[in-house]
Image 1: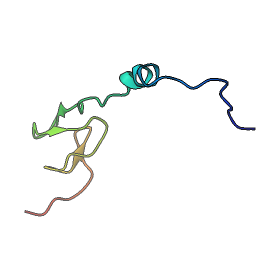
Image 2: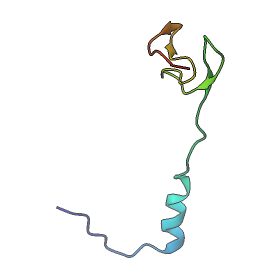
Image 3: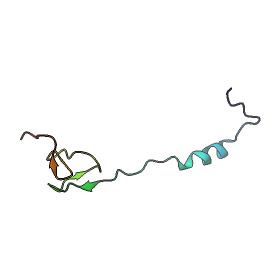
Image 4: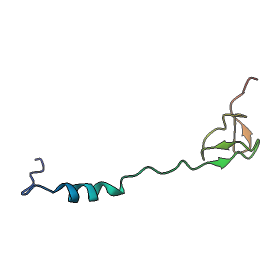
Length: 60
């Protein structure tokens, strides 16, 4: 079964319902090893470490 609305919604009612759909700014934290800004719970792209341990070798 699909939705079958009884009456048409006005543009104002439809758009006010969609008004809360907005993007959030990306949350960034400092890397514990090198201090670069990275997304939380991800390997640092600058030094290749996660949770103070080297996970990926970065070539210079």
